[in-house]
Image 1 (cartoon, rainbow, N blue to C red):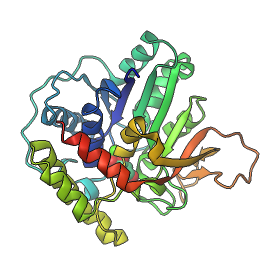
Image 2 (spheres, helix red, strand yellow; image 1 turned 180 degrees about the vertical axis):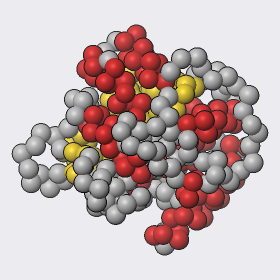
Image 3 (cartoon, helix red, strand yellow; image 1 turned 135 degrees about the horizontal axis):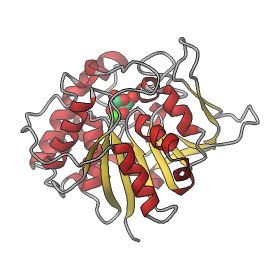
Image 4 (spheres, rainbow, N blue to C red; image 1 turned 90 degrees about the vertical axis):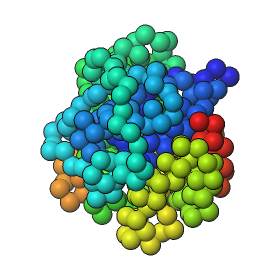
Length: 313
Ligand code: BDR
Ligand code: CA
């Protein structure tokens, strides 16, 4: 099979970093057209910096990395240094990047790629707030019908939220953007907290990363060690959840995931439940399905894939 053309839209983030590394390690499955950065876990200048650090770590300095939107559509930016540290990529000591930032705006790159390639051949992989994707859809409504799929990390149903009781971080930061994306008509696959909280890095799994012995394996082990403290303290869980790598793993092994094709709407008005993904998992409304909402993951299969692929870099 020819590799799937994707754009990774991201706010790195240690888990974003692992998602990017998995994609870059898998050229037979994934062709990364470019990486578009957005403000989220940390402000935009840092997410662009971090994406460049990750590509340099992987030895892939020819990847195009674009800067995108520096704030949500209609709200002030909320960041997550309390999870990811001051730089967003705290943990390993990695050199400041020197590879260039691509010219042009991330939103224009997304539009251009969708128009350049045949309809149904470019997949968008958002790993952060959906500001860039929604802005592209607003600016160029014709692209909606050209998108092969949007495979995104965001939301939660059974797990509730992680930034508020009701909302997951990526959707909470820009609920208006999420609303635009979920109403776009493009085919959507959602990796909510219900799945990503099953992708836990246990000590044995982290040892497997470290035992790869390469700079990538060691850096990934140090990244997850840094950001696991947050979830360990909060949930009493065994280790860090690798949220965003669920998206790139799905491109390679969709059989590792189980979900339902259902209706998902985004709360954009109530302060109490702002950014909630109202997922009709039980089919109690007659609202038309607009997303495949994942609920389960073969975690052992996921970590085996991840470790095997990261070892290639
Ligand atoms: C999501 O928010 C960010 O902190 C992570 O990178 C992930 O994309 C999890 O809620
Ligand atoms: Ca992210």
